[in-house]
Image (cartoon, rainbow, N blue to C red):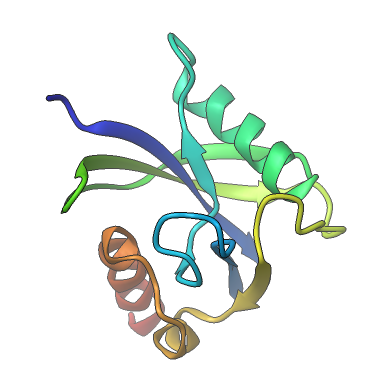
Amino acid sequence: MPPLIVTAAVLHHRDTVLITQRRPACRLAGKWEFPGGKLEDDEPPQDGLKREIREELGIEITVGDIFAVCYHRYDWGTALILAYTCQPLSLAIENREVADHRWVTPAAIDAFEMLPADEPIVRKLQHIEGD
């Protein structure tokens, strides 16, 4: 079975990035992640990411280059995450399809229980910040 292809936004504002918390009714409820989601059939990844951010947070974004590509095996199957560097066009975030959101520095992300699939993105952010 092929992996589920998921997009993620590494949204930057000043020296912080945006993380969101999964809702109680979701798989892995309560964990934190980089916002994004599954692609629809034949949807380009950048378009799907813009759609997901609009649906989840009610904001528009610009999508830049690929930041990281991560493969993770969960008990339900595998996921391939395409994480893009993004910029918000507004900071008026609404928690539409997420429980909560936070702007955090890469160093502070360790205080949040992130999804295992997002850990490589966290480590890359922290490595870049440390340089």
